[in-house]
Length: 252
Image 1: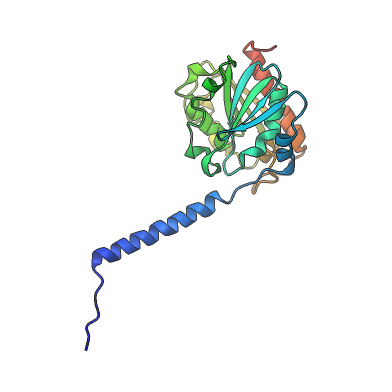
Image 2: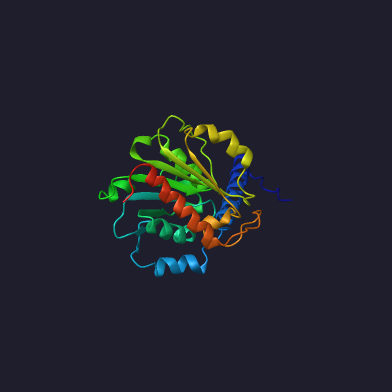
């Protein structure tokens, strides 16, 4: 009778480890590929921007340039949202006079490239004053990036987001905006971390606004029911961002 060949323990362990890594990789792939897609309005904004706004794509970024920019805005998209979804907001900010740089994130997660803004201002030396901001997870990651570079920026824009980094003594202008119907922003964390912002930060709650309407990607699971249109929330947000720059004396 032939004796059955035994698999060495080391080989069994290696096979088990490989199986675990394979399953983890598959789970990660399923997670990052399950994201919110930009709607037709957002995509059309990139292809056919408003008069006076020039849109360009290059190296993982989309820029929205007005004819006479008065400041720059680097924007981090929300978690698991296709970055093109923020094109209408960037176009609206460009109408306010901002040269906007919308950044792509690996896996649509800003946490995977918190330093995505590195070197962006140097690409556009004609812009003298820079702001940085983002939506939801993107806003928090933008704040974390900013925390060690406060002298390089004029201010921070947090859309349905909060800063886990201490910016209280930074002297920056900070704008915090969220919608009254937002059911995704963790308000306990928002209140907990508000002390990380300068005492004079500007807070705006948009009546009827929701979490998803800072971008254009449809309804977001768990969000509240909006009482205003997507376009109205974007308009109000862009105007608030424009006012932030005015506070720094950079207005035209």
